[in-house]
Length: 299
Ligand SMILES: C[S@@+](CC[C@H](N)C(=O)[O-])C[C@H]1O[C@@H](n2cnc3c(N)ncnc32)[C@H](O)[C@@H]1O
Image 1 (cartoon, helix red, strand yellow):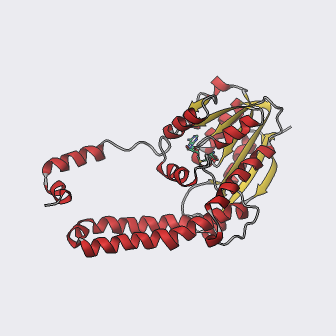
Image 2 (tube, protein in one colour):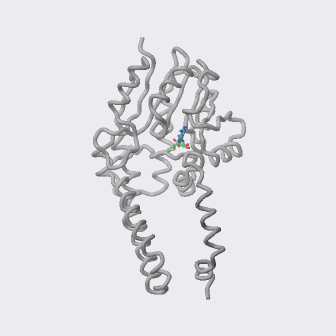
Image 3 (tube, helix red, strand yellow):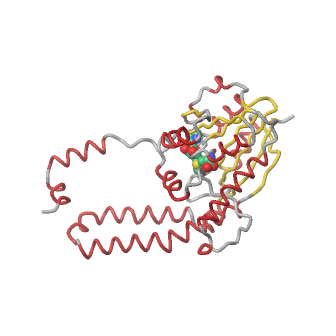
C-alpha cells in the first residue's frame, strides 16, 4: 500500500489534518504567497506591473528582461514626480522587496519602508540593512506617532490593499503641510468582475474631504498592459495546458487516486478560470484605469 493511501485510511492522519486546517493560515497581508511567487520569478526587488514605453508588444515577444526593464522605468517615473529637497523624509507604504527604497536612497533622500509582510521585512533587513522599516499594515499604525514627519508619502501599487478613508486620514496626519503624496495604482471605473482596486469616484470624494488636490495625473493603463499580456499569454498557452496535462496523467496512471481528488480539481478549474480572467488585458482595461498621481494639499 503506498504512503498516500495509508495516510488516507489511518484515522490518526485525519486528526492531524483537522488540526492543520483548524490552525488557520497567516493572513494574506502578513505573508502574501502571490507576491512571493512574483518575486521568485522576477528577482528585481519590485512587485509592480512595470511601465512599457511601447504598449503594443505582442505577448509572445515580451521577455522577462523587458518586464524587468519596465519595472525600473516605473520606479523612475515615481522618482521623477518627487519635488522635495534632497535629504527630505519619505515613506514608501507597501514597500514590497525594497527596490524603490534603494533607488530613493541613492537620490539622497531619507526613506522609511512600511510593509505588513514578514517575508518582505526579513528580505529588506538582510539586503538593505540601513533602511528604517515599519512592520505593520498602514491602517494599523498610530499616525500621531509620525505627525507631520514626511515630505513625501508614496504608494506604489499598494493603495488598493488599504481601506481608503483610513489611508487618507493617516496621510493627512503624517504628511508635512507642504508635503506630496504620490500614488501609482489601478482604480475601478466600471462594474468589475473582481473587486481589487478602489473605485475612482470614491477616491476623488475622499481626497476632497481631506483637502488634497490632484496636481498631476497620467493614465498609464496602456503602458502597464504588456505585463498583463505576458502573464495572460503564459497562463493560457503554458500554465493551463500543463495543468490539464497533469490532470490527465493522474487520471490515466492513478484512476483510483484521481477519483478521490476529482472534486478538488473541479474546484480549482473554476478558480483558475476566474484568476485568468483578472489578467485578461482586454477585460482589465475595460474595467480599470491605472494612474500615476501626484497630490498636494489644496492652497
Ligand atoms: C503589489 S505590491 C507592491 C510593492 C512595491 N510597492 C513595489 O512597487 O514593488 C503591494 C505591497 O503592499 C503591501 N501591502 C499589502 N497590504 C498592505 C497594508 N494593509 N498596508 C501596507 N502595505 C500593504 C504588500 O505587502 C506589498 O508590499
